[in-house]
Image 1 (cartoon, rainbow, N blue to C red):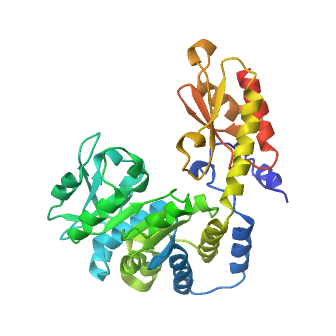
Image 2: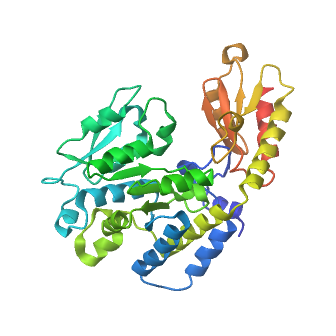
Image 3: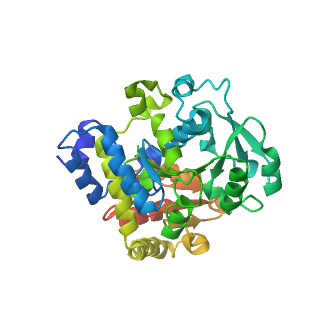
Length: 375
């Protein structure tokens, strides 16, 4: 049965994904290497603790860290990491979470880098304490914010690019000087590879990555870093619950296929010819941009050429909404409601087209539909 037949049988409408690795669209398409690894691991049973041991060792070796753990997404990695920081390996405290009575439970976060997913540390009972103001945070402010209830620092790795904020190395130095751990959300910080390894080996105690960005499943993530803290996070996971500690991580279960698949996805990502990968994306973007060039008032540019650092290239298609009498949101909705349905992100006056999640022949379809809606 083909992919289309499977969806049609269930009455599900398929979508051409020009939005990128989005959770609401299923995250990613598994690479052949990941599918093969998952199919192979599906043929036999084994103890999950043994799977975590073997995969964790391989992940740690690949990233240059002391420990590694596959989780059910980057958010789950943050929850388990925070739980490990809060309760450690104390069985009574592990059972007590999310009640943090008698525990230090405050995680510091720079106010300019607040983001949607920082609430993850509140799931096991942590409390977020903002440091600095809307526009800046200084090392001294971060240092002065440490108090008797501070248990650690949550660091948003993408926020390191924000101006007037504390760098990751400085945050780690400040935290460790006070005897505190650092939990890093590095969900999509996977390219350049030097950036990924630099964050993983930065000295942060726990670093979290999203598995979907590596070509693994939507419901997978990686937690790596200090071996002791990774072990504590693992105790707060679902295998810890099954061995009797009643951990909060029981709901963050992964199966053996996902663990093996994510480990192989990481290996494949680190071995990938990224110049070739980006060249393919550049060609797709050029094809769409050239095809839109003749439409008056519409401009298209490769956004990657401006920032030059992200894992994927995107095309910005923009126009004067007032002059054209049509907003980007309206065009985006028309694409989604069309046949075939196409999903892309929109901003004021522009559409953002991701090409790395397009399948064979879909670049031409996206171009055709864009011309129909914009011409």
